[in-house]
Image (cartoon, rainbow, N blue to C red; front, side):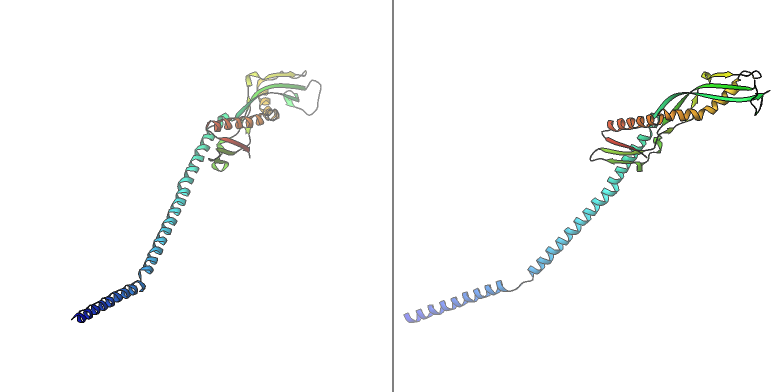
Length: 243
């Protein structure tokens, strides 16, 4: 009886060991068995990275487009506004000169008719002292966006402006013209209409003398001072050049 019980216990232990061994082998086979999940996980990761890359490219393109369309437009708008302000300063970029020129005329007339021969008593020498005002300036109305560069980082402005010119014809002070004449025996004193005619001829000489006196240079210096002061009030340093 005792041997029979020991035999049953031994048989039970063997069966239990076999079950445990089978379970262990099955578990190991399950662990070693290849699966599709790593591959699917790799594909999913790759797809996510691709989507992120595309989104980054779209964001970069959007930022670039914004910079070009809006930041560039803002820069041009600001420059255009600055140019308009410069154009409004046109009346300040001027210089005025007071010039007095002496005009000398000689002629030969007999009975109010010109003659080619210098006969005694027919010659007359006429002197006119003509005062006038000459105005010169830089035409800032000609300044455009192409003439200006604005650096917002360094707060610097580079501007190219036209050379100074005479703004208008000399303004002759007709009521202050002094006339001196030396008449011959057959000549009458100078008439006012003759004086006015000679004053008109004096305009060209007045312009030349005004330029020699430096009225154009003074106008350019005035323009530079006005513009630099204007830009300085806006917080910019400036470099002004002439065409």
